[in-house]
Length: 398
Image (cartoon, rainbow, N blue to C red; front, side, top):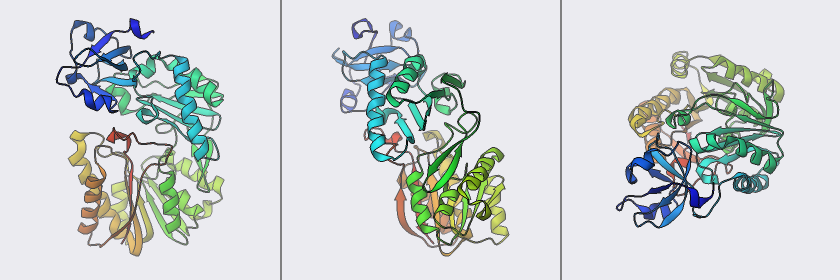
């Protein structure tokens, strides 16, 4: 649709237009003049955003069903959002990733930070998985898949419709094969000397978490000849990396039997099966049970799901992070290492570190913080949007 034919949405006179001009990508519903015409704009439609003095600010995607009413797509008010525009975004993202990684296994699009608000794309060689977590991306999913294929040369494009973000946008949870044929078995992905098995059709999110790759590598440096415990292990993230780094043994704990089966398949494919074990169960229960058993490990890693996915959940989430630290710290041998992670964007680094240190202290242990890790460079951070820097990994020596 040409910009001149787009509906117009306008900021209230006292809304903070400066923040948007300086790069903040969202406009909340309480910042806009909401009239009858604005309410009639379809979820996922494009509009021209104007400031309170009717000056054009750019092309936005609109969702009247979301608190984030507008997402900035292009600050050029004359921009045309079509397949060519999408292709340019994908091509720019590919160029950077191909400089950073020797093989095409990475996060290709990290939402706002790559100029595609609410869109996540993970690449697995010749297959790409799109999570269209915003209504505009759902509306343009066909041209998006075509542009993605042209920019990358992938033969298969899958849509993953799961996730809390889609629910907040009023979208369904359907998965689909957009181009090509969905893989009928998990795909092997080599990272940090280990082979991971990614279930692209039945696994969590897009099938694998690339964000922890640099933290897996740092942990592996601590694990030579070590006895390792990896809690909330998913498909063996830290455990398999530690074994590649020379760990004597690794125990993966997770509540999902399917995830642990994939972890075992990864250990087998990596040649680590004889040093690898799994234990299925609630992570808190297993941590408590290991404490009662008097178990000790040289390195303990806890990488839980987002306990604080939103601001209202923050205090409860911080208590959960503190509890993880309190239960995990006694399992670390003297002079050993405790790695605590959070993927909750609502709990910033200072709060998460505070909760972790309180938990370690309540367990009667003293700690040195030796390293703080974040997501890898295929998960770029948008400086104006704190939510894009969600991952924190704290490495303590006890």
